[in-house]
Image (cartoon, rainbow, N blue to C red; front, side, top):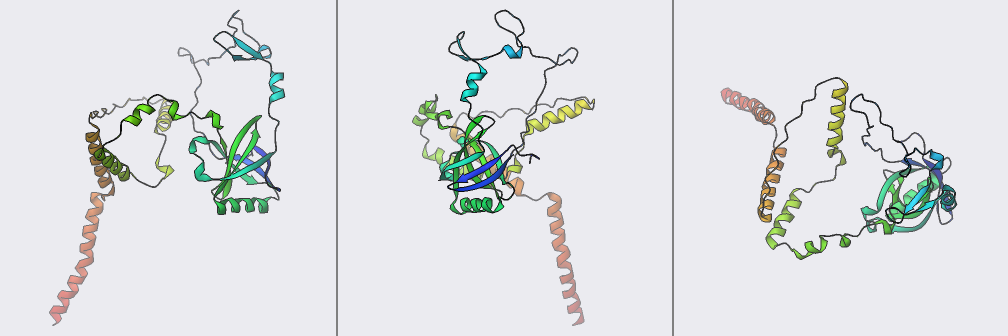
Length: 299
């Protein structure tokens, strides 16, 4: 978690006011690179150059322009935008409480933690307990860094989380995209649907986020570390791509067979473990057999 709060203010619902601090709930691991000259390794600098006279333009002489066409713009100066910029607010005003299942994940953007400020633990705990008991999510608006966001307040890991959301008119409808209508006309056969259902069920599992890794980022970091140490990087041979199956039913059948084999191998104990288990049973049985032999001898 960040050492410093990103924002501080209060949550208000009804006449209840809860002072809070906002912390980022995620840490982006995106790799960033600088542009370098391949001959001497010098850093590439970008310049702001006018497309008409070719001269470099100082930052104080740059304004914004909204494009109407390829070569036509509406000029906007910063003073005009400043008048329309949402005023910085120190309040998260909850307008509605809705059910979590009513919010499709497509609406969510970035997530933050809201923690109680000094002296607000009781009111904070009350709001947290209320949303946990009712299984409701608070919908509110908040201004962060001069931009207004729609947001959702919900319980997460024993705290309140604030997730910024996309506005409804920012979402793209799948019905407007090419190919959706065509897919609706191709209904699966009963056999295909049955096999596809079995394939889905064979891959069913609990969601464990630690199982999934950004393998590309790990490989790039490994490459960077090797080159930084002066090691020679040897490119691995790529595995041959699987041969595409023309028939959908054949592809489903092959997938079921592959998943079944993979699951069986995953559940199979290692050879040395099976060996130890067998010998463990033998070691466990020998004393009993020996006791029976001694008992018969005494008779």
